[in-house]
Every structure is written in structure tokens, then in C-alpha cells.
Image 1 (cartoon, rainbow, N blue to C red):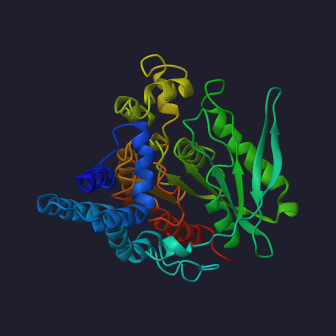
Image 2: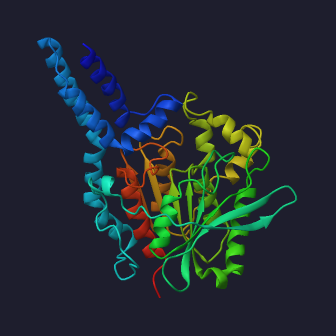
Image 3: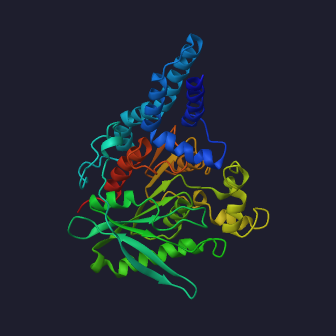
Length: 381
């Protein structure tokens, strides 16, 4: 009986691999289920091997364990399905980047065994610089120097945190990975809501770019090649900056599960048991949509996309319960209509924060895609 109960509990957890999480804490668990699937696969096998004295309980437990195991394996199966098409889709959408490839590392978009061996575990210790001073706050960035000589393109990373939290230390693994591939990486902080509101974070992005340009010799930055990369709220800032600053040195933007249409987002809120998205947006934009509709429009990157917009990479999981997957679907359609070079990496099993584990199914696919995108938009001289 205990064996059957344990397997049933695992079965309930395994549903998070295919269904959206209904609460905040289950969302955290959903990240673990989808991006560390081997842990739950091993647990299921262990419980399957437990012996039961009663034949009926044994058969029921075996059947439920098999279903549970398949659900825990589903992110792996679906990752291989995405990986099988990814190289050709990237080539079709972005062009052939082989001539531009700097230091290819991930030969395959996804490998089950790389979840154990890791795709690149060597961390780089960043240098910290103050890039802008205000009377009440000094803004800093962490600079990860490229591990190859000469002036290199610079990726500016903008953290998530609902515009009111998070910091430049968030998810540093990709920063080190890209620095080892020959990119300078600057992970920046920005002024936070509710004290500061849009467009001040976008102004902070401009200040960071200006600082990096003015220190380009010291930091060995190719000032002709900046790419913005944002996660969640940071992706909204990155997209808006890329589409509105009109800086010819910004060559691309990478959007990890970001809100692209704030007007749409206000009327399609998150499950309040996961996130009070109305309050989050009101803090960032100064009120409800009815009170400040112009602020919502002015902070919606989708409304500023044009035929001249920079190449864009979208990465989003269909099971995202904080930022609707439809944000990326809608922006993808708009970029298609405008003829902007872009690619949309859709991850059917993934939720918000799916790149938390760089070695997981989403982490590997996203890293492979980011590396190829950067190779296209910042070609070698």
C-alpha cells in the first residue's frame, strides 16, 4: 500500500511535465521536473522496484509507475524532437552561420548524457563596475571578459524579477559560457519599480551601452556589435531598448520568456495563485490600464517593432504560468509580417525560468540557439 501511495504522489508530480503549475510553489517544482528529469526518473524506478505483498497493489503500482516514468521522460523525448529540426530551422530563419562560427562548442542541440557531464561547468569570475551614478543609487554591471584575445562583440544581460527585484548576479552560467566562446558579457542592474518606472530602465540600458563604449579599449569591446539579452521583465526592457533606442551598434536582441505586449498582458493576467501580475504591472507603469493606458502602450515592444527592427531571438515555454506564451506567439507573428530576421524557439514542456539549469533540456536547446544566433548577428571580421 505504501509503495502504491508513493508512486501515486510521484504521478501527481509528473503531471507538471505536461500541465501548467497551479500555484507558485508548484511552479518552482515544475522547473525541477522539466529541467532535472533524471532525478525523478531514478525515484520512479526505485519505487517501482519496491516489492508489494498484494498482487492487486503490485499490478496497480506497476501500471502507475510506467505512466509516471513516461511523463517524467516526456521532456527528454520532446527535447530530442525539437533538436532534430533545430539546425535546419535556424539556417532557414537566420541564414547559414557556419562561415561566422567563432568557437563551436555544442555540436548537438541536445544530448541526454550532457545533463550529467554538463555543457560547460567552468565559471568565470566577473569584474564589477559602476556604470551610472544617481543621487540615490549607483548602478553596477558585472563584466565577464572573453577568453580569446582581441576586441569582441558584447552581450548585455538584463535580469528578470517583475521589474521590482532580481539582480545582475541572476543565472550567471550562460554569461560564463558565452565569455568562453569569445564574447564580452556585461550583466547589468537597473532602477527598480515601484520607485522607478518605465522608461527609466530603458534609459539605464542606454547608459550601460554608453559606459561600455567609452571603456571599449580597456574592456576590449567591439563597439559595432552589441546584443541585448533579457529574461522575463528584463526581456521586455531588452526588446523595448532594441526597438526604440535606434542605436546602429545594437545588432540583435534575445528574449527569454518576456512580456512583449503590456496591453495584452494586463487583460490576460497570470493565475493569482502563481503571481499577481496586475499589481506587478501597475507598480511598473504607475497605475491600472484604465488610469495610464499610454504607459502600457509605451512599454509594449510589439508596438515598436518595424521592418527596420534588429534580428530577434524568442525563447518561450508553452507551460509558462508567469508570462503567457502568447506574448511570444504574437511577437513572432508581427515579426513574420514585417519580414524581420528572427527565430522563435518554442519549448512545449517548459515553464517560466526554463533555462535555470543550463544542462537541462531547455537549457541545452536555448544555449545552442543563442550561440548560433550570436554567430549570425555578430559575424567575425
